[in-house]
Structure formats: C-alpha cells, structure tokens
Length: 154
Image 1 (cartoon, rainbow, N blue to C red):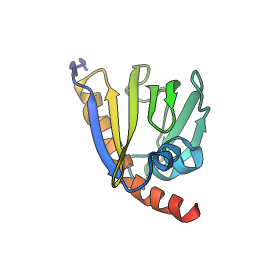
Image 2 (cartoon, rainbow, N blue to C red):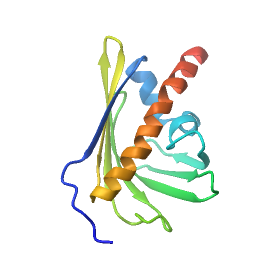
Image 3 (cartoon, rainbow, N blue to C red):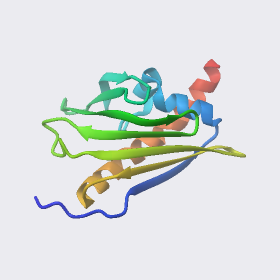
Image 4 (cartoon, helix red, strand yellow):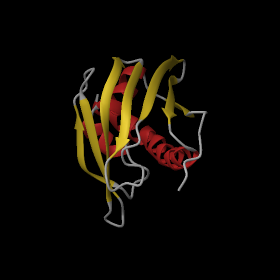
C-alpha cells in the first residue's frame, strides 16, 4: 500500500466538566487510563505502563474482542501539568502501522464549564489519520464517565 500524504494533523476537541488537574490525571495515571484509553468498551488492557517524566516511556497494549493484541509506545517529550503533554507514538509489530513514528500533543485549557481538551496527532498518511480518528473518538467518548467517577472518589 502506498502512503497517502496527510499534511494536516488530526485535531480533536472535547470539553469535560472537570478541572484541568482532574482531566490531566485521568489522562496520565495508568489505573485511570485502563478505563478510557481504548477505541471502545469492548477493548481491554493487558498492559499499561507509564513513566511520567520527560524522557520517560509509556507502553499500552490493547486487546480487541477478537483476542488480537496491539501495542503502542513512546516517550514523553514535554510535560507541563496540568496544561500540556507531548509524546511520541509508535505501534509495535505486528500492527500494520508498526515502526511509523508520530507525535501526540494534548492541551488542557481551563474553561468556565471545565476543561477543553485539544488533541493533535501528527500522522504520516491519510489512512493512519482516519483509523486514529476513529480510535481517539471512541477513547475521548469514554472520559466523561471516568471523570465522573474520579470526582466521586475525591
């Protein structure tokens, strides 16, 4: 398959009814990530590892309903709690996009009604952009439930 250029990054925006500190923690804490960091509820995580420091690594395994496991990992490039995260993103073999590096930037903006999250994922081609849009859309849709539970626990 020939890669189709994707000059425009994938940009998704969502607003959550929680402070940036809460949304940032839900985004970066492995126990909270297990609850939302997946394309849909039918996926599970055999592995979520996070070393939240610049130069630290993360690695997440997604197990689909068919039993197939895909693993993504990378390195934290910038961490400014609770405002911004920048990290590399690369799938491992046997994923069809294995070895193709990309970069994710997540911004957490305080708003009157909570936090506006802006996710920017710079991807190599149009197919990757389409597939990651679907995955991120599913994941971002699970965050409100996690944020609501987080607030109950606080």
